[in-house]
Length: 190
Ligand code: 5GP
Image (cartoon, rainbow, N blue to C red; front, top):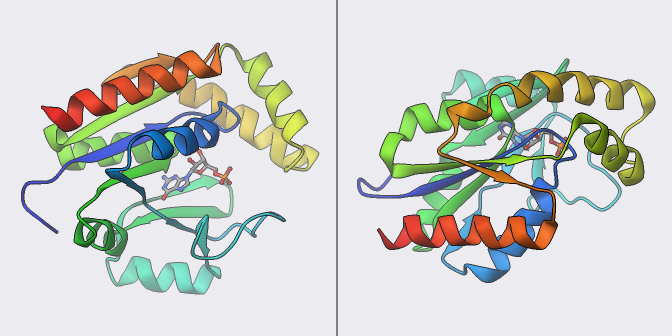
């Protein structure tokens, strides 16, 4: 890894609009590149290995863990592991770009602790738990059991927002995107 580098962390509970904001931010700030995480959850219909995630068997994930390949990893939901790979940071830095991580709230806090001032951590705050529930139901990617797990976790995650450098309210999507872009540009330029 390079010595003098910057990283961006975007965290929020599931259903808070993180991925939508991330896609818009990546379009507007070409200096950034998405860090592809490893996960043991199965791919959704529209997801591809090596684009959205590296989809791994639990044994492969364990192997990488044992090799020290992860900057951080979390069992985000029971039995579902997600982790940030050192190799992704290296890949992105070799391209001369700044990695942006879309990770759960505890992963975001770990990354910030690890990288300190070199990292900008942003928490995307949903309007309410009720709004999260509606978004997750509309998205339709989780069954009832998984949806309930995500909502339970969201309640805990919302209590952690003060650990982040910046909290952006996601009430109006366009305004939230504008704010996230503003803070990232400012951080990159500093
Ligand atoms: P999903 O299954 O909806 O893609 O992601 C579930 C949660 O895991 C989201 O909050 C997402 O940001 C988070 N996540 C994705 N990649 C990572 C990672 O590398 N580390 C951690 N800690 N969380 C991740």
